[in-house]
Image 1: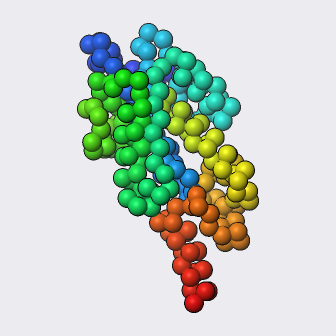
Image 2: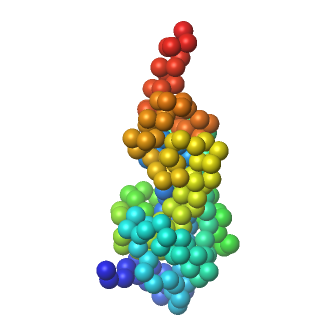
Image 3: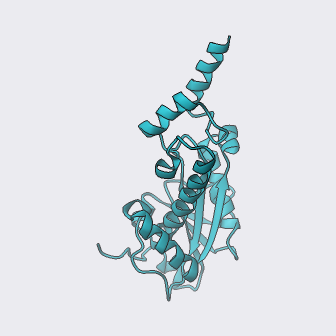
Length: 209
């Protein structure tokens, strides 16, 4: 595969401006937080082989995350399960992105955001890029860091709540996870506003009545 081009970053780098890539992971799972990362690459030295995190193995993502953290500025933003249930997953995703930018050592001049919208109240101007993780190395770097961070969180809570397969499915609605939901019930890490979880809770309420 050819390396991702820096055509989105270059107009800012040419003016000596700092540009961040932002991406999130965890919109689709039934459990766990939504996580965003913001990454400001060094235009003179950043890791080779940056790709959309979904195209890399877990081992390669871990290695790339270490390189990114060594050679770039990184901010992580998290929105909790409680926040997802309170404000909905889209707004929680925006919260995570806002927090990722705020967590950077220094506010960037501009943000390149994966998707078709720039989160409201972002602390700097932004440009949305549909499928940005396949087009911008800054966004690709953010996708790698965010996925690695969230996967590790899900592995950790899987040790506290075994049986749901979170160490491998990261909370996504696999057959194993849905079967465990029915057999083991709903945990504090489940998103109660999501239909499969809500339906099980509703059925439990009916059974108790």
